[in-house]
Length: 206
Image (cartoon, rainbow, N blue to C red):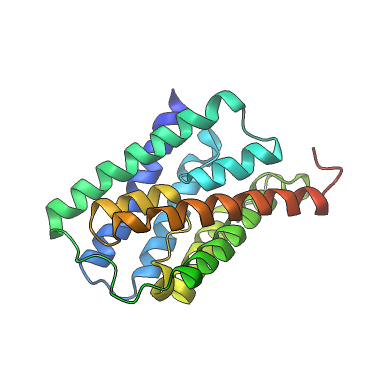
């Protein structure tokens, strides 16, 4: 139960930061988002692994470092945290105005896929690999990856790289619900490919 509560809390503060930074027009929002993820990973990594992202949970499970029995409860806790955070953010700032007209689906799919791959690839290498066991930089590496992605492609896809964040921004009307499938396909796809690449690069790291 401690693991699931940790995942809920970490995802809550990640999505709350996303919502408040974007709805409150904080500049630059990616710095706040990356920092929030970093500190939550450091805070909860020793309890739950600090996933805060269903795509990361999938990647870690495929890599063999997450029990099958924990996958769905992690996802439920992460989505619950995201929804609660979205409700708090909209209480503070009101709802957003949805995705701008001209949403480019192929570009958004590729952007979300690439940076979710990058995020999961970094997580697997800094937080689960034998060669980096016991390091003190894993939270910084993970948070900076999300920050870099948000700066690079936030204007293309919204920069979620996380199905729970995608649900949260949909609740906040920062993204339209019909676009949710883009995040689900790209994020889970990026996670699966990252796990495959990790295994190819680290065949003896089991």
